Length: 371
Image (cartoon, rainbow, N blue to C red):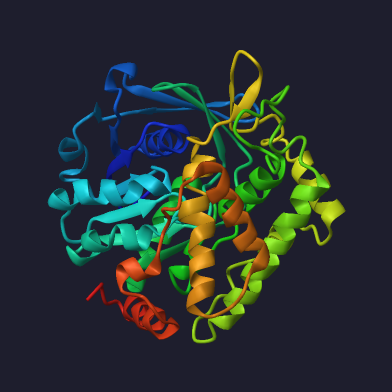
């Protein structure tokens, strides 16, 4: 297999990072993993699929030095949660070389803004709407179980004229089609975890207050209910209407979750999400105490999907003057239970009007970088 990129770095040794590193190494790429626990690796990673078939890949190296991890790399996969992206980008900047590809998986969470200085320095940024499959670590530094490989992937890049080559590379790695999106905002507004997780959490813990303890940790998907589906569909519909307000951009690839899950009604959505085999047994983000269970507000379900997921949609609604009561209500719930008022703001990046946003997207589509 003739791959476009051979020297690969993978930032993060978690679920997705382990999968990516093993896939790349199994295709005979030179793979370096950046991990805070390099001592946990023996040099070989394994992927176990739904049929218990094993794919192996031998790492070139594993290091806790970011400089050593990415210096000389052609392609850098970033698998950190959204709230860590800006800090990581600042640490990476001194080692970025012109033409280096930085691929964020998934590419949501404002990645294009977090890595803006890296783009100015000559790096190419790309992001996937969704990760290739469900991945769950069985042993850190050794083995990950991957199920539910997607039939296709969708990718955007900045500058946009680099996307085709990158999509061909991603397609070769996973041996499934990878399609190019018309703009990076089609990745940023993907109604995946930013709506899926937040709708579930805000209904699951709707009555939570300090001191409240739950008797059990429910299955996040396996015990999904109609209340969660109702809010999910309402938030998704608001996002679809918001996308239509961006009349100068092709937002047709921000597909409704009703289409993605082939579920047009609340009842159908509940049945669908309860029935996904690869997700069924996942528990909710909770911590067990002596008295019972409480929400884990340090889980990335909270720390990423609200302030760097749903908040982006909320803030964009303010820019285009479009009200979204269900999305705003969900964000208000998050702020009330966590006390966290920090979140992504377009104004931090000089975007105050929809014309500012159009101008930036036009630069990217014309192959230009951040000015």
